[in-house]
Length: 186
Ligand SMILES: Cc1cc2nc3c(=O)[nH]c(=O)nc-3n(C[C@H](O)[C@H](O)[C@H](O)COP(=O)(O)O)c2cc1C
Image (cartoon, rainbow, N blue to C red):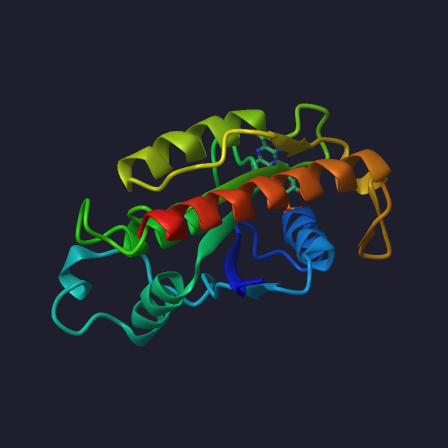
């Protein structure tokens, strides 16, 4: 099998973040030819067009290179006030330039959300889909993975809920299928 690399974005920087744990659970479910790396979005400055000239900040260059090198992306977003987190939006804004020709263009992406609330972060996911449509990033549409009541689904950092594991496996399968389809076309 051709190796596949996935760059994962946790929209939460919190130690013990449910979103980060969900991405780690997804990585642990991956078959041997699929490897995950985590994007470092916490060290990015606030987006400022004046910084985005010929020599952007080192952290931005690293992020753009990591996205360019990846075969696909996996975003996990918390829901902050019915939307995605500022830290994730900031990372996407940096990655999104130059507009319509950025490293995000055409890069297959899976999205998920996790929250202690019953609602699972579905509102944030809708916003994330809209944002990624602006960057021309094809998003896997099914299965939708919205992890509600997150604290009940993990124990000591590990995913223990069988149904959630099944959904994450399904999402990973859909992402790798989209990546294979994408690379067959290019
Ligand atoms: C500023 C802020 C706003 C929040 N707004 C929402 C919200 O709109 N919907 C929701 O389900 N949870 C909301 N929460 C709770 C988060 O879902 C919760 O903190 C969650 O654990 C964040 O994800 P993490 O565990 O990956 O850090 C909010 C939390 C913060 C700090």
